[in-house]
Image 1 (cartoon, rainbow, N blue to C red):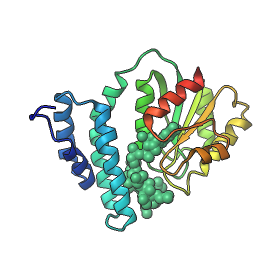
Image 2 (image 1 turned 90 degrees about the horizontal axis):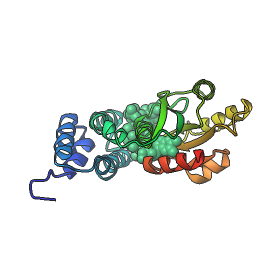
Image 3 (image 1 turned 45 degrees about the horizontal axis):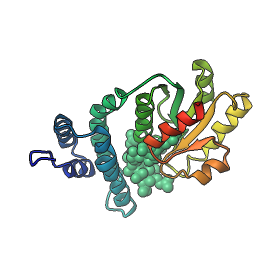
Image 4 (image 1 turned 120 degrees about the vertical axis):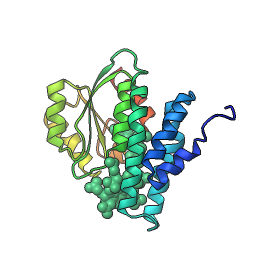
Length: 214
Ligand code: B12
């Protein structure tokens, strides 16, 4: 990069301290300078949120700090997301996505939704705090081939099992695959609840979804 390139670590800092205005300005400047939008997410914003999480664990940050950091990331993501979507190719399948019941975290879920859209999927985003029945009803309504479930809390990830069971109870398990993700979720956990797939990031989620509909 040339000397005039924006200092991207400032985006990390802006998200970390929850400076939404600076996060927007740096993101706009970076995009104008031709920086890859995906790299802004994976190299600056997501690591910043990981650091926010560590500070929360260490009692250096509390819920208000989490909220303002999340707001800063979401604001910057609003500019970046459409650019990821624009990379789209042929429509490859329909996905119903949401955050599991009792869980209000939606940043990662939103990213996965955007990347799937960018990867050519038609995505119905049910938002947060979504019950197993709602996932299944919507999947039937839009004829989805994938249900994507996000969970960020160890206490709510157990709700993913309810989604797998609801899909089985509706006789949909052949037509509609369940994929799961979110910070506390592992491949081992996904296997233990009978989910059809797991990935730990949004790009891999697209590859996974493609593989499942192939
Ligand atoms: C921001 C944040 C919040 C914000 C959420 C704002 C929002 N709109 O989302 C607010 C302040 C509201 C919040 C609230 C709470 N939070 Co919080 N939060 C976080 C924090 C700091 C970042 C999460 C985040 O957005 N990460 C960035 C995204 C991009 O990463 P991601 O979600 O993991 O998603 C990626 C992958 O996991 C994957 N992925 C995600 N979903 C899916 C789905 C599929 C299908 C696939 C394939 C992949 C996939 O792809 C994504 C992109 O690469 C985390 C710490 C952390 N580092 O995870 C704590 C954290 C998750 N929160 C925590 C806690 C405890 C809470 C509260 C209970 C706090 C409280 N006492 O009130 C509440 C719970 C509220 C509720 N009922 O949900 C704990 C959870 C601990 C645990 N073991 O369960 C964490 C880990 C912090 C900590 N270290 O203690 N939180």
